[in-house]
Length: 154
Figure 1 (cartoon, rainbow, N blue to C red):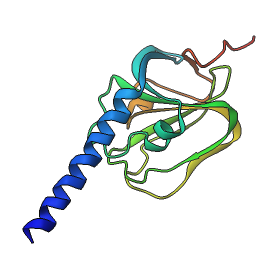
Figure 2 (cartoon, one colour):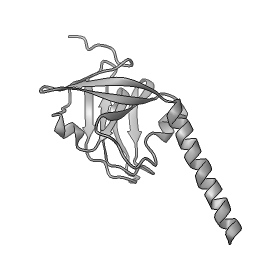
Figure 3 (cartoon, helix red, strand yellow):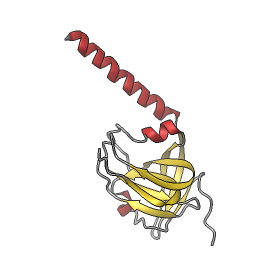
């Protein structure tokens, strides 16, 4: 029995080390969301590789209100995500190439296997602490400023 527990501890330890390594590999950049009533800047981890996009915010216990995760999918396409192994409720903001918000999924359910997504092509998704979209008055059509989005054409 003791050997089994030691193996379990080793596996958990290695899993946590992998999580720390993959999180450390993500670059962090400011992402500013401009709504009709406010402009709010978040410190965003950028998930722009297959490994970091697959990992996302899985296994995290906390999402601070001033932080975000930005999923960069490279080129615009329909996106579907789920909350498997994600322990905190999130707001998901689906963003077009020009930085305008296509859709918002508020208060997603932790650990759910339900898909959350959009059929229209988007360049990225921003995950925020649940309740943030409501707190800052976010709406479809609002604008996101980040290195991956181009300026909207008027």
